[in-house]
Image (cartoon, rainbow, N blue to C red; front, side, top):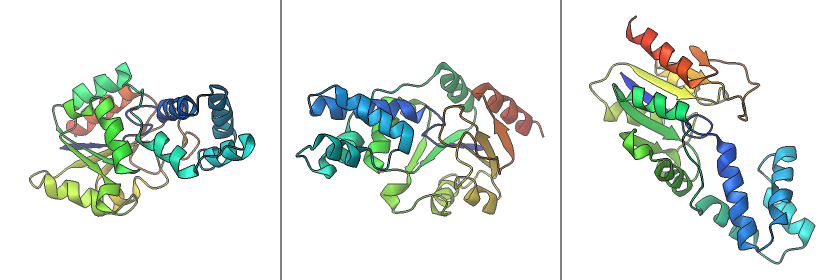
Amino acid sequence: MVLVFDLDDTLYDEIDFVKSGFREVSKYLQNPIYYDFMFDVFIQEGSGKVFDRLISHYKLKIPLQKLIEIYRFHQPSISLSQESVVLLEFAQRYATALISDGHYIMQQNKFKQLGLDCYISYPLFTDFYHTHKPENRAYEMVMQHFKKETQFIYISDNPRKDFIAPKALNWIGIRYKNPIGVYKNDTNNTNYEATQKKEIIDILKGIEHE
């Protein structure tokens, strides 16, 4: 059996990365009030136009791309919850992998900061391979890496795209319904759903004994 994890809003809460990135940008701009402005825009509108709004509102003479780079490539202040640590320690009885979208340097920085190299043997950052979910390629690469395994389980928070390939490839899906995640109100579309990490462990134990 191979347990394959998503990263953002699955193994840690992505809002912590967002806050960390905004703090880094406001530090670079040497004005702490920018943090509150960015976070308010993020809550109201999502992440897409935060830096555009910041530049426009404060009439900043700085390229948009510079702020994006600071945000993406900063060393994030994020950590694993105790629930995630317990889940990852339980997962050590199986083979482990990770499939994550997003700029690969940004995702690698998160991976390293969270200490996931202690738990995940095969991390796969889709951007590095010029693919992304819901395409099959990353999932097929995991299957190729673990050729001798016959059962694959994907654990993720996003029902919109993350479980399309697993279903096509006959994987089992476990949706973690993160209570503060972007997709918390989306309907589940895969085999199992859990609202707590300890429920994921119970589901895995049940699958193991089927």
